[in-house]
Length: 181
Image 1 (spheres, one colour):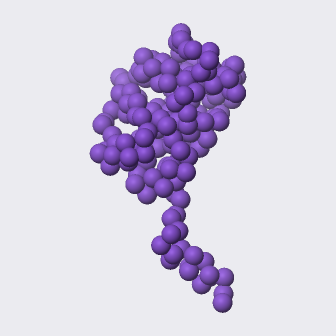
Image 2 (cartoon, rainbow, N blue to C red; image 1 turned 45 degrees about the vertical axis):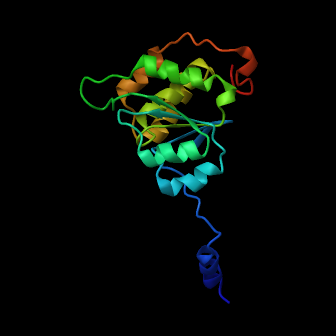
Image 3 (tube, helix red, strand yellow; image 1 turned 90 degrees about the vertical axis):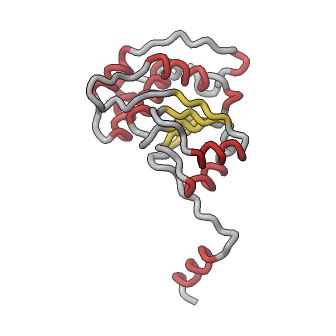
């Protein structure tokens, strides 16, 4: 039997589910992941992560199928409304980013998936703010990571990360001490 037919037989078995990560999926740090908007094909993959929380940064409501899936799996959803900042005269929302970071500083919410439509700019800004305020990364490292996902730096996003500041209040007992600086 050739290896091609062996592989084909493996995928033909009903108990075998393909695990397909969402667009731009990556681990941010222990217990936190980032991606674009998950589709039903991504649900088996995400179930392996045993998520407790989803942070969604977007202007539109989540699709009903995503809300139903999260509910079935006991996942709490935080939706912070943020418009696409690539449109003229639209800026990042510092209150939404600060509120999302408040969820991130509580390890009882872990594992967390943070996502936006494509997992580039809005999530990139959130991750950049997290790296700056909570992990004390250098700006060069933050901007390099942002550029890897955003396929070219958005000057307004880079500037936002640079000047963004928030007074985050959290219970030290539940702070993610394994990466919080």
